Length: 410
Image (tube, rainbow, N blue to C red; front, side, top):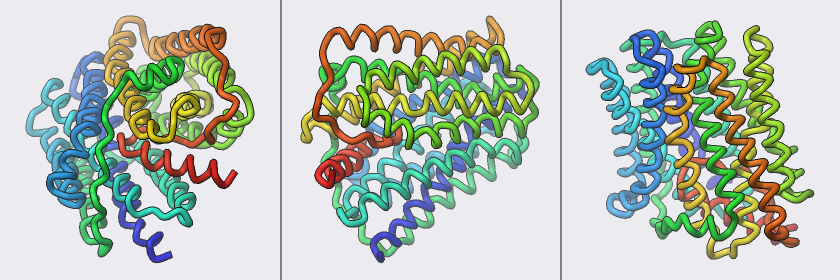
């Protein structure tokens, strides 16, 4: 129990990080609109965030090896706070894009430290409870971060200063914990070809997941503004997407374990197309928009985890950490490009173009999934479905160990 309680410092840091750097995305979008940025420039900010996220995932383990967990965490949060504070020193979309690279870098690096700490300290008797708590904390904080824009004024130095203060506060719990720093885990090699060899369908799935998540979260505020939602309603709209995704994890996990994962992936992608079509045509009234946002999250959020589970079915235990890193690489490929492409389409064709882009991605996934089902059979002996956060390359160590533990118990 003492060990479990010691993780509370890590979980509190996760909450504060999500509230600060997770909240800057929707705030930047609305601030950009207020300051006269073009729609494409606002999309560029979202793409820059995921570029920083990928750089942080790649570099963080090496920095931890050089200076240790606590110092590395302080470096990442300081960079994130600097990026937030600089917003109103230079009001320029290119400069803001560089600052958003810092925010993405901060999130990826800080999560790498936290997950490496968890990986080193978790024991089998509390692993399930700790990971469950971690997922709830992360998802809950992500949900709250989308609501930040309902209380913070866009294009205001005070708003960004508040987020920077929260980011700085994230340093305090982890650096004050009395728990000893763990030893540095071996850095996973980044081998994208491993995912392609294990499952081309899983690679397609995580790319589409990156396109969907990044487009919705980073360009969703622009869509809401275009269809006439108020600032608070835009916050609720983004939060409904995250809430729908959280509610989907248990039923989709049950389906993915019981039936052929490829069929589950195909059917939820078909559901995503329906959700996109409904949102593009029926969205407008705030209540309907919230319901459709939750439906979209329900059918799109689990795509990454199902694709990851399918890839793990064809991997050995010693490949799973590197497989998780390679899947994260392909997720980043989709996420980096998506916000800029989505915002450009909105500028040219109107707000419904956001959901046309997402539905095209899922349409490709349906067609590719049907083709792959004719290419080879699925594995009879499969790993358990585990909700896989897209947070750092280290998460592969946590989910891999949890998967093996649950498989042995089953």
